[in-house]
Image (cartoon, rainbow, N blue to C red; front, side, top):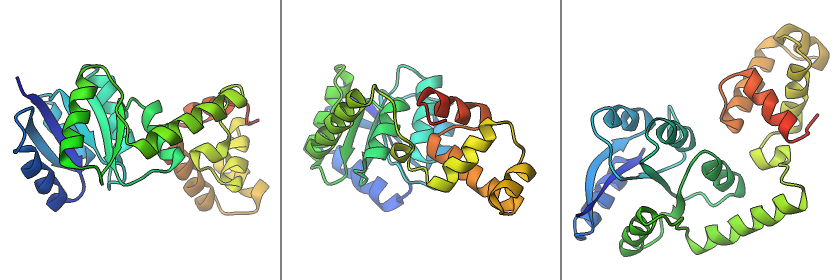
Length: 215
C-alpha cells in the first residue's frame, strides 16, 4: 500500500512540482498539499496522512510550530522537514519539537521518496549535511552537560536582558524603565523571544531559561 503524504510549503508552484514528481512513484501518494501551516492543520481535522513533509519559514504559523502542534495532536503522523535551511538552530528546534527527519530541498525526488519510506520504518532520515550538523549539536550538548546557550536559539543579548527581568517578575513598564526603552519595544522583544523559543507565554520562556541555567 502506498504511503500517504501531506506536503506543506508557502510556495504553490513548489507544492505542485513535488506533487507531480511524487506521481512518478508507486510507493507514495499525495494526500494533500497545503500553502502554510494554518491550512495544513485545517486539512488534518478531516484526514491524517502517514507522513507530512514540512517547510520551515512560512507566514502565519511557521513549520516548526506547525510540527509541534501536529505531533502533539496526531502522534501517529511522522513529520519530516523539507527545507532549504541548514542552520544548527533550525535543526535543533525542529527535532526538539517532534520532527522525525530533516532533508534539504535540493535532494532528488527519488531520495525524498526513499526518506519517506525510511521514516515510516522508524528511521530518522537526514541529508548528509544535516546529519553532520546534528552530530555537531550532540557533541556540543555533551560538552556542556546538555545545556543549551541562548545563542543556540538565536536569542540576542538584549532579548536575554529582557527574559532575565521577566524571570524576576517585572512587568513591561518596569522592564522598559530598567533598560531605558519603551514598553512597546519590550513587548516586541518578548514576542521575538516567544517565536525563537517556540513558546506562547512568559512561564514557558522562563522555564527554558531556568532549565538551561541562563540566570
